Length: 194
Ligand SMILES: Nc1nc2c(ncn2[C@@H]2O[C@H](COP(=O)(O)OP(=O)(O)OP(=O)(O)O)[C@@H](O)[C@H]2O)c(=O)[nH]1
Ligand SMILES: [Mg+2]
Image 1 (cartoon, helix red, strand yellow):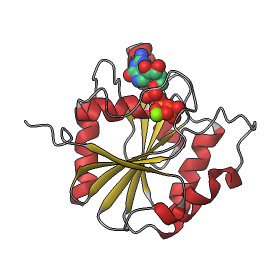
Image 2 (image 1 turned 90 degrees about the horizontal axis):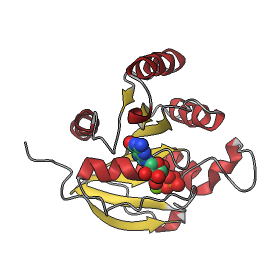
Image 3 (image 1 turned 45 degrees about the vertical axis):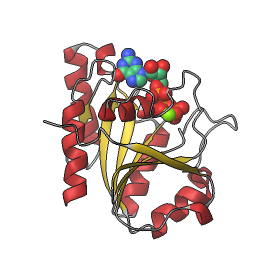
Image 4 (image 1 turned 135 degrees about the horizontal axis):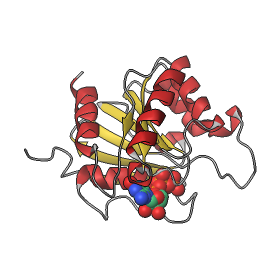
């Protein structure tokens, strides 16, 4: 089957609310702590290793990066949260851009919450889950770097995250080994069609 994400193209990065594009179509946010593997997952989804910059330095992504999968369907690579230089994160630290975005955005369909499978459910992840729940936005916890743990730990962590959240589905992927990337594609297509 042809990869529906193959032609995904970078549109632009936005740092201010006034620069957000028109509120149409469907948008899915890719969120997660810095270094969780969001950009790697985007590259694996699309099969384009050069699409999103993969940074080995945490906190490189500093804006909301818009990617267009096809007309009316966008993926948004969010600034990595956590490891903030200013120390511990608090709710207000989400920043005005993301707060406004959640409040007003009709196009916002779902949020993928990427978490390193070895360090899931950090306080900042729980805040993102709360943010989604408070705005009634669907979210899917995506455990990353599954190649780094045993099958046993993998299953246990999926269970742990399922129990701790109201998410319908919890995914464990490896972008480097391309494990469960097709499942992630199917979930995203589901959001697009829904
Ligand atoms: N072993 C392994 N390493 C991975 C995987 N996915 C990402 N990484 C590594 O994790 C590091 C961070 O990956 P990124 O994709 O840049 O993480 P990010 O979430 O986009 O980080 P920010 O842009 O800072 O928010 C890189 O060194 C990647 O090579 C994976 O599936 N397996
Ligand atoms: Mg990134």
